[in-house]
Amino acid sequence: MQTENLVRKQFLITPGQARKLELLAKQHKGSAAQVVRDAIDAYNPDDPADMKESDLLELVSAKVKEALADTVETRIRLRKTLTQLGLEGD
Image (cartoon, rainbow, N blue to C red; front, side, top):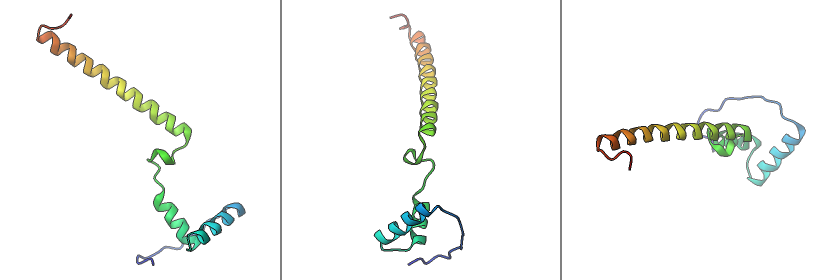
């Protein structure tokens, strides 16, 4: 049972969504409102599992660019260190 205060919200859903919501509530032996609360609690837009394909591709692209920049920076530092040690050119 919910122990915290709840706020009443009203929203519109399609008839298909309403049927699915009632089915989920019945399957989980709870109320439609509880299914909605659980779905909201489970939703995390920063989790790749909850992202759209285009958003995932954008994230992957950004991470690859970040990794490439880090690699370039690391290679520059490594080259400087090797030069200082007299090992550059091997």
